[in-house]
Image (cartoon, rainbow over all chains, first blue to last red; front, top):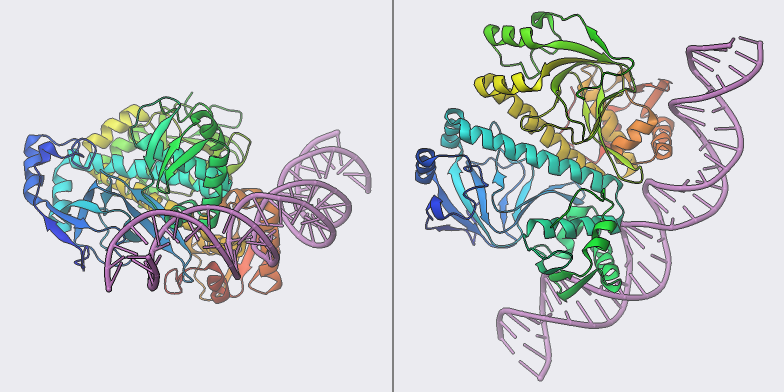
Length: 249
Length: 249
DNA sequence: TTCGTAAGTTGATCCAGATCAATGTGCGTA
DNA sequence: TACGCACATTGATCTGGATCAACTTACGAA
């Protein structure tokens, strides 16, 4: 099987590339009008419900895809069930890689997800013929590599508090809310358990660190899944990152 | 500065690409004779002594390079000095990435290292004009991404014992010694401290886990830097990896 | 041959985060 | 209106690996 044909999967009417929210960041970012129309003819949309598996590790896939909306996670699991998330796929991120025919990890929809899919064979041919796409694919891969290496530092050397602060700051940076020093109503797209899997912690530790930051007045929860950053400077201080990097505003 | 012009740096006479030990795995792997002669004309060799910095984080670099011989490490450091190695560069691995002009981490020679260097500007032009090189560069980047993600699982979820076993098994797999069930005289290219930085441990824990595996008869040291694997099955068992993956012979 | 130093081992103790356990909260469904 | 369930919080305890410390080993330089 390729991308799963499960219960909640829906094939959805296509949207024109011109009004696509990820038009300028996804694999098609560098394409001109002609190239775009080729992609437009090849693409199909699929939606997955929160919690649903998009792809299991080891499963051959016949589609590659861009995330249009929603959040998906990549995770690896040890024999005994310990799991580690190795990537978070946000809108414009790409699923699948040239020269590989089966998934190296589980891909799970953590929220409802919409994918813009291409059949793998034709897409690979197109990549070979279209430097704009090959080039963008390279950029996306290198960005992921940078992110993976930042995460290695976090997993290997940061404390629980630093991990949580880094995670919140990451979400704040990606959600482009613009309010210097204070960020309101940041939505957590993951459960405590998922966050723990992302950060190499347990869900209890995640919960305790959230509570600690709340008690200190650094953040506040309006609801379990929605928080505000009350003291951005303190939060950035708690990440353990160099003070210069990572300015949000 | 680009790649450092320090104390021990030497520019070394070039070797013909045809007799180059990494000819078929490095960035030039897919090149035909014509392409190779262009690279041959551009390249220069540089050597670095063990312990020497090849490139510091944030430093602009004017060269990219392939590792010809030796081992180098990529590492990231937190403000307070905690460091995490985020990659190990073995012969044929590539330093530098298209579209980036400064290092994202420190690159240190852990053994004596020989690099095959190209000036960044001309090399990038060549990449754009030579699909064989662009393609190979993409493959190398994706392989690194896979390795980084495997390491995230190790850093986030494995125990000290599993980390050490995984590390030994990794070295065994890359040194292509062929002796089913038993591997002799495996050389550790890193100090205990470097291994600790690679595995997200302290050097004491590394030492203790080596001792434990030795006492159990899984491995043996003929010298502090040279070990033999006496019981490969037990070692693989201790990695925590799926039993099917990771066969060496 | 000894001295100095970097690297490695081993022991004793400590503590951050895991684990085990109980309770709380919100929401959809009957 | 209450039942069931998934998710989250909080407390008590345990423990793997960090930290602190002493000692050993290898080796190159004087």
